Length: 191
Ligand SMILES: Nc1nc2c(ncn2[C@@H]2O[C@H](COP(=O)(O)OP(=O)(O)OP(=O)(O)O)[C@@H](O)[C@H]2O)c(=O)[nH]1
Ligand SMILES: [Mg+2]
View 1 (cartoon, helix red, strand yellow):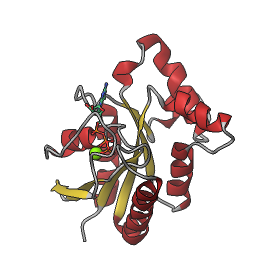
View 2 (cartoon, rainbow, N blue to C red; view 1 turned 30 degrees about the horizontal axis):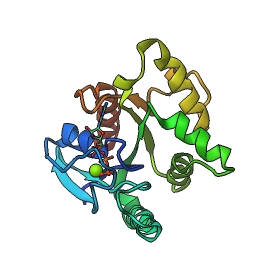
View 3 (tube, rainbow, N blue to C red; view 1 turned 30 degrees about the vertical axis):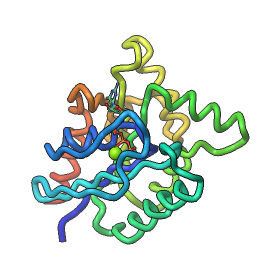
View 4 (cartoon, rainbow, N blue to C red; view 1 turned 90 degrees about the horizontal axis):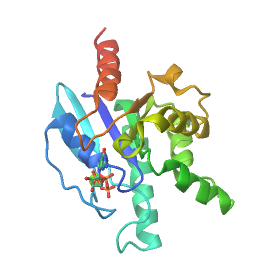
């Protein structure tokens, strides 16, 4: 049975763009959220990479449809749990804090924090792909990553989490930190 590396996260954060970088398999990406509708798998180097649909704020999607997507993601993770080598939660690092603040302002737990906790509670090995760092000024990056980690329950400085946190720009093909983490897990698997 092949192991899986699953890409999950909110809609439009760049999961499919990252999937393409990791697998060389072109999938539909787009400016509008809700582009990926079904899990899409590619076998590369003996592991399956899985591109999942994103949750939230989907183009023309009703609340009911959004809930359906959430259920689909949860069901998939529960069904495949034992085969999942790594769950990669992709976020848009450039807008994560603003969005989290907005949710908290309404008295709600930010969806991405809820998802992170859910994945961890499932006992999965969870990694954060902090994507779109090309949209953050270089001088602000360390601080932004510290604040993001703190929201997810990881004490700053973020650099003590380099085994779990990968700042990347999928669009620019700058995903080395994530490749390093994946290579480490694959090496552990074959030991
Ligand atoms: N600036 C920037 N834009 C990015 C990056 N990665 C992806 N994008 C853009 O973000 C948008 C959404 O990308 P997708 O890969 O379709 O996002 P997704 O998470 O698969 O979206 P859904 O399938 O709707 O869940 C596209 O316009 C991408 O070009 C990045 O690293 N930096
Ligand atoms: Mg997609």
